[in-house]
Image (tube, rainbow, N blue to C red):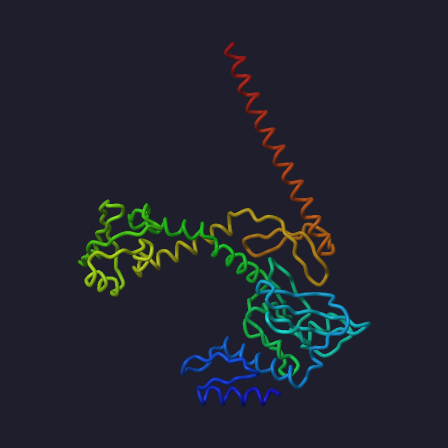
Length: 355
């Protein structure tokens, strides 16, 4: 099977032409070699079409699903099925039927070891992190080859150096998607160059651009109000556009970020904001699980997790977390009431002393 797949890909890339497997067009790159991601998906499409036609027994799932490892917003699932005392792995991808990807084993741990090369894992904020013997960690997101496990032994090709780095990357990725942090960074960048941030998100009308030794001088209007700013440099395409169209409406943000100097400063500020958030932001308690069970833990900016509860089932851990958060909320309310009482008491003392 593997030799056939490699042969098909050789022909695809040599001929630069599309193949049609069971009426499904494989993605090609208009005269270029397939990208790694495209090749991976095409390889799986070919394998899926082949077993669908020639090995329908791979889609016959007998027994019960006893565990699910999901990622990519549940579009991809690795499931472990148990049939009496036998266990095997199943893969399910969006728009495709679930099918077997391992042989039958005597335990859940053996299934994981066969599919991913390790039975050590951690579920953290919707991600599955697999931990190898040398301490390196990988996620299935960028390592999809296990889908071909029956014909092509899985070997991870993208790693984090350790579990702490993996957790930090996940949290950092969440922060990068936070528009509040991005806005903080761009405002700080503009302040550094004495550029007013009042026009962020607004459409302005360019009047003129002139280039001299000090940089680019830009005149523009916003709601019939004239403004002038100066930026260090600007992409040449903008200078050409304003020459062709002296009065052109543009988005202010898009214009100033075309300065490579400002763009670099923004990235440095952005990274600084993320690091600052990681260091100072209060991270709530959360449920983390591994092969031992689920527990309540607290995340630190270093990527470390502090385990603050015994192991539970995942459902019980979620229930216990709700109780903990409710307790913390009540305690905070008590503290606020006490602070208010102390303040009122002090005010009363001051009034009494005056009397």
